[in-house]
Image (cartoon, rainbow, N blue to C red; front, side, top):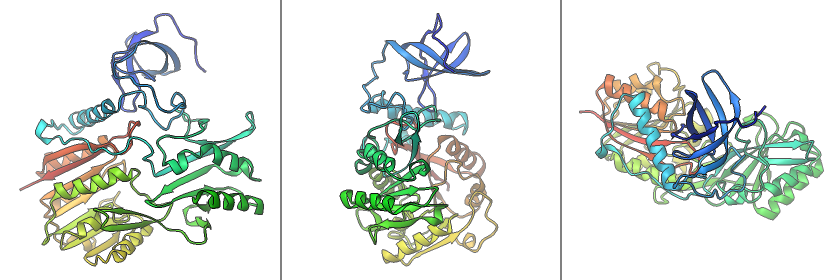
Length: 439
């Protein structure tokens, strides 16, 4: 339960935490302050007191930062979907770059020179998010359904009418979706909507814990007819996802100067930000500089987002992925795009690969795009290959710093280029690309 403001709670904010909260110290104890920016003088309301640190929110800003801006979203103060809308966009990127450099220094023990640091990759700041999971909850006290991200404290669904970071086809319809689910016979048994948008169409996966009645099916059919958004149903696990409307539907996006068309299913992992994905692939090809005679290994290859652009430039690409469905998706995408110099294999890359046939090949370069946990289990295998270049795409600066430190200190690589990619504007997520090389 929140305590009342206390005397002496007017404090100076000295920094930002990795999740975008202000940082200050009260009586020698660290306090994380939602809604506060560095150099601001703020009045606190404590939310939670713990042994090592406290959590608070800023209830007044007595001396605002010159970098503070008015959030576009009227729900910013309580919605957990964004953390940095109150910070100017160029300063958001500076913050993310500093987070990366601090992790490299502290965890990887790597000092970055100015010549190694690339300019951030940028795209649209709003309406960029084409993949998301939205929480749904029928709130008895309000007698209505809420649809959106969770509140910043994580327990409740934020009461939002729209979302400015979601693809507009979905973000402008949160209220409409809430009213539709409110009208369902099983409104208390729809916990989640999953959003998936391609270049030309969007889809919603409706997670439901009880069977839909005929009137419920009709509601979603009418929504599709009115909006063009495809509707999928998911009564159980991911394997239970089925198309409700229309009769046929396909999601796809184009990459590599529109030379490649990538099909995907609404539950698949794809890069959230289409504009950044285009620029990320272009930068990856420029930094890695693949040659026509080379063999390249693509670890955590997914549905072939990097594998297929590589295949247009090299002799052979070997993609490795931990999901059989995604391996099949990558094979189909290669076939659809008439790329026959690829091979895709299933392997659990969270464990050290056990002398699998694909490992015995000669590789000139390695590209990897692991999950947030990083690629620790693969580093020895990468080092043992003949690869002279490694391109590492990361969604977590701490695991990236750890892995880069190992490759540099233990395996003879040197870090040549590194830079952030603003995949998630207005949030604290940091995406990075790094190029390593060895003689």
